[in-house]
Image 1 (cartoon, each protein chain N blue to C red):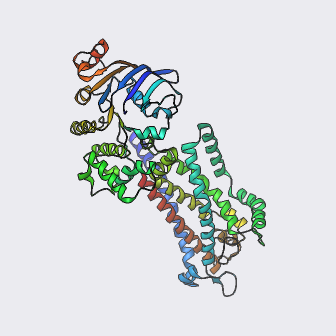
Image 2 (cartoon, rainbow over the protein chains, first blue to last red; image 1 turned 180 degrees about the vertical axis):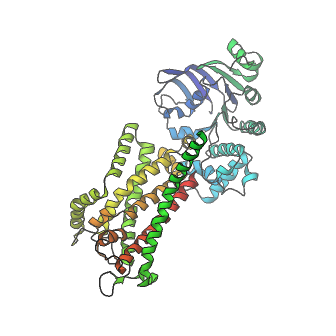
Image 3 (cartoon, rainbow over the protein chains, first blue to last red; image 1 turned 30 degrees about the vertical axis):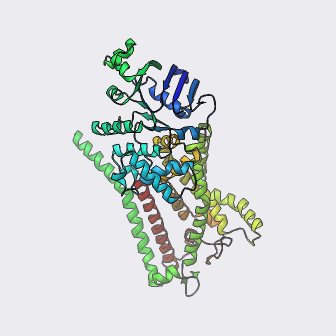
Length: 251
Length: 287
């Protein structure tokens, strides 16, 4: 099952507690948005799910995060397998300084050896098609990925993820460097991807959360204040702090 | 008044900036003037492709091919030794080493760069040369190989520090992206970081080799200085630089030998100019 269940999750950076007793269930094949002001811990939470926080010095985690029946906090998961299954799209599009083709087959080359040329070609076509870039780029596969526009780069990064066939996509403010039209198109793509993937998106853009997500969680100072169906959260928040935030009183 | 002061300072800095270029041009002109005179005695082709270097026989034979081969062989050997070790060292320092070891290693590399070449040559002479002789069962340990090994030590600091710099300036989000796709640390290094830093690494190698080609003292002490075309790396060779250093003191000013040594200087000048310019091109491609 490609859902994520979080229980009693605490995380410290040195002495600073960045996540406090977080508990939530991220359902399969739905989009869940995490909103909240800067520094509230939403990106940190996202980075727990693929263990990217491991690179931060002095980080400690306690609690349970169950993905695929495995507790990825205490069970010492195979990080390569975990990250293959739980992919991440970053705030700034970060294609590698290689060709478009090489960017997409990167994951394949890393995980499976000895794929034939035609298998790789097929993967490239499939992944680029699923992010609606194939028609634009099919003649330019040998060009450097750095020559693409920001939106194309971000799509390429999503395609690169899809190529390794994950079940869960983590998106850390994927549209924050894009203009409104490009943002709209990426959101369109997310709705499309929802049919096959569980998506968790961190955003500081409340309209975006309201537009694309099925569930929303509101975080403040490391606490998950409220979590539920997006329409419930935006129509009738139960917590005063949530209400203040979504009505724009702070943040 | 203030304007005048600004003006003077401005021009002063301008002149200082020009000075370095000016000196290079002067040196080049002086070298050319002395060097071109040699072509009154020997044609450029015979000079570059001649196989005999007997500058004081009568008539003098001024072919520098053995010296060019000597320099190339020693440099090539040094490159083969220092490039893999230097790049591996740079990868270790920038990616793998914990911060304590990293600082320690960086200091060590700087120290290596600070050893005067005559000291390296001396150490090579008393330790390396006897080893080479014993291990390969040679009549003498003063060989191209010994020179290559010592020169590798001299190229290493340049290669390591510039390559490390290039690796360090690869944006961190490439690394994150690779890890997030499930790449291991090693896969991230050789599939993303090394290609991303490649132009800086090539520049590092070029500058390291540039240093090796111009090096004189250490090679003169340990390569045996036989001006014959080498057929293996285990025989004595003589480099372009060592020839100038060893013979300039004995050459009669204004003789064909004297002019030939200047012409060797021009050849060296051109080789290192080409290397430095291409290193520069690679460095700029990076930014």
